[in-house]
Amino acid sequence: MLEHCLEIHRLESLCDTVFRSAIAAMFQQETDAILIMKLNEVYQTLETTTDRFADLAVALRDVMFKHV
Image 1 (cartoon, one colour):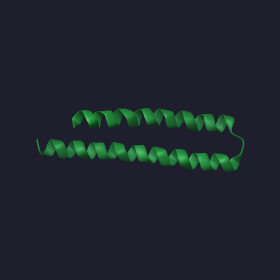
Image 2: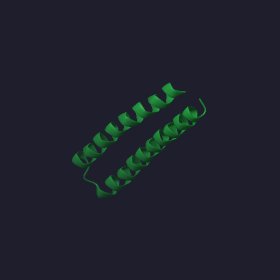
Image 3: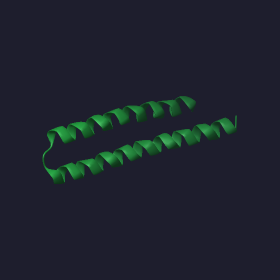
Image 4: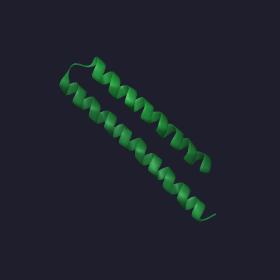
């Protein structure tokens, strides 16, 4: 279980990097303000989702260590 929690953390960190790159590319390449707002909301939602998975992995790890 611990290895899964660590993998979730690794993937969440990778998602952070992808998120920052996507936001930067969006503002450099896109000129349509409405599309920027829509894409930004999608990217923010995905980032929040990955953050919640990382929170879940921490909670699972904590429970696991309490009962070991």
